[in-house]
Length: 500
Ligand code: ADP
Image 1 (cartoon, helix red, strand yellow):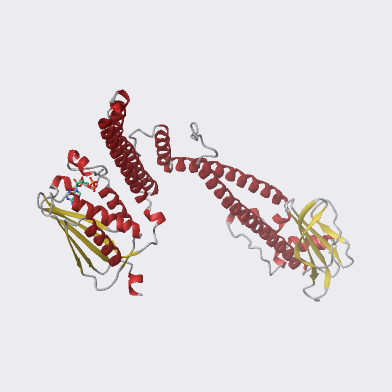
Image 2: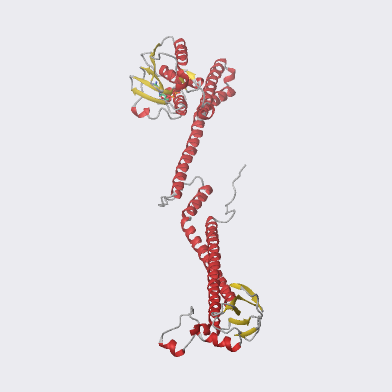
């Protein structure tokens, strides 16, 4: 039956690791998206800039060559290309600084000097008349106005083709073709990728590490809770409590709730142990009495009819006491489960009170019973009929049992809006202030010696109180020693039923 497992380790990853992993995964995804966007927009920016450069160089060449003669040849082309003054619409901003003038650098020419830029000029017959690079390049198309990415001899770059329109005649006299090699594109792509990759790795490692540290810090109290629970599991008898966490968060709440549960559980266990102890104590006396009588009979008593008779009747008496005790203990334990089994039961107040009252009147003719019934009409109370009767019988029985000279019991029934109130008054021995607090405890009897003669086990009031509390009612006692006692019971009225 023993199900307890030995020290339970974690079955999976610890919360700290899970949290660290989740946070770094999240950061990884976010960073990857960010890296892709950065990569794409950087490359686009670079390509756009290069495209503009390609277009600019082509336009400048076309504009300079517009001054050329009808027949384009090498000399003519060279003269026009290098003579920027002819290009009135030059978009190149010639430097006017002293250094610039001294060096006399034409930015267009210096552009052409770059190995990545190739310029080709063709005459009307599409024959190559001028080139800035060693290799020839046939005219792609006669018009390719926008720079277009193409692969030329294994190199990627922008090809632009524009016709040269003579300034004077407005006729087309040849074509300019430029090839703008995107040499650094692959390099930039590679560098960007490596940088982003390194950054991504760093962010992943850092976020995992930080996530781990943070979760370890925040979940530290959880570990304390777990360890304490483990200790309690190993030794349930111990008096260990959850330490106070001082974090005023959910975990502190958990610790507080756990401590409350622990206290309640320990008090239940204590009650249970006390109960078993009380029961065995209560049963010990009748068992000892019966044993004594049986031994007596066994030794010699059985031969004496008088002793035999006396012992048998005493034993029978003890056995019926034990029967009552067992029944009462059963009633007490059942009273605890009222809310589970009898939650929807109800009974008629007037009917039950009158019936119990009449029974007592019949059973104890030497007593004066009075019933003051203030209920104008029948009321339904939310309690199972047998339990209602049981409570009334216990209290009325006590009233009779603990009456002295004045054998009178007064019963009053009245009602407020939500509660039925019953008062049962006797004029007997009364209860001292000190005992008032204890009479509802199990097995408590004010006068133990006399109680045996009166047959009480000290369970009646405990049963009544448990039942009444479980039906959400109230029970109070008012008493003056040697003058008498009033028990006041309140039971909830079923308002829906009563209105019908
Ligand atoms: P018992 O079976 O002994 O009557 P109860 O639980 O009914 O057990 O009562 C507990 C104790 O409370 C009794 O032993 C008695 O001392 C005291 N008691 C209960 N009712 C009265 C009463 N009406 N007048 C005086 N004492 C009472």
